[in-house]
Image 1: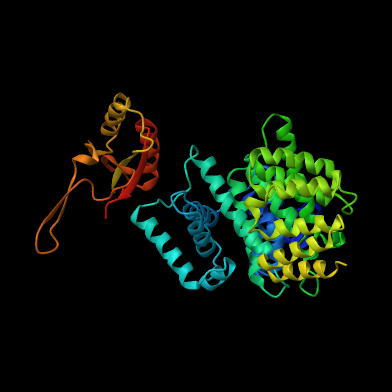
Image 2: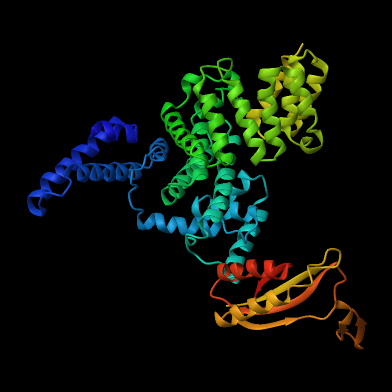
Length: 392
Length: 107
């Protein structure tokens, strides 16, 4: 049982303590209450609850991480009253009658518990703007009588995809905006996004996109320890210390991806989160960039581009093309996206890298300059500056 | 909770003109299910008149208050317990009328 608990909670101390407490409770209760019909299951369930209680009590950030790592029982434990309430709140904050920016602000404020200044900073808007946004959203909920409840089974699937969009945006704010590890806001954002996605998964254990989004978040979060250098510079995938990746999160992400691949094999077409998760699974399976199965990555992008017409997908697909067909072919594909992505720093950064590989130093420098100008965060700017300054 | 449910038509791309039987059937359901408070189709915007008597003299203007290609074609008033119910009905209404629908609460 301790082994099961250790696998589940990733912590031997917690597992041992929880197991010991469960046994102690059994010794206390069973003589009086009688033997439960399934003593093994009783012990496991009790130990799980004790471990969860301890993690919540301690409430440290890396324990929150462990909480985020919790694997639910199969069948899942019934949701507690607190979870029901949080679900009601999430669905209300993510109601389709609210504008997306209102949904984001509300979810972070009401469900995530962030302060107004923190949310304003996360989205780079003035506090007064953010305040008005939230006030107006709350006023609309009241005036139009948006109900405070979990949607009916019939409405659930479409409402869930709205929630997933919000959670993914929250996650991205926490992930992409992260600088050196002094601002706890960012860790809390990604951990919060993961926690909320797990809640939704408990409600809809068979929903492929929920599983896909969770897998995607875990596989991205797993790379966090390697993503920013000691000097606060972004470390791109090709330079990351893969030994620093969180193997627990990767293992869970891979398990979810395999589960969804099996469903796809049975004929259920995968949605975009599942495909993105699969792409990340390929990356996190490789020892280094060269060891990466790029043809599988490209095949997945070819699938993704059919369900997600965003030019950013086309951009990322081109990066995979570069690995297989060389930078010249890839650059041609990237240049076709000029109209749509001229204001996006990653477009220019991608061009800069491809031009560098083609030996076009001057053009590469110009592209890096553009990317630096447009980049929103200091870790990214530092990285781009270094790459530019490394040009001949 | 009462909602004003407006049917919006577009002069550049008007909705189909054969919707009346479907609309009547929809109205009958709204009445049977207790949501219907009022319904009315509107005459063309050309038939509207605007009166401005905020100043010294009343001014009459021929036409709707806002000249735009989108305009009000009809109105309902529904009684519904919350917005989810109203939106579900409005989703159906939009299909039935082949037009956009605005759902707006009364104060």
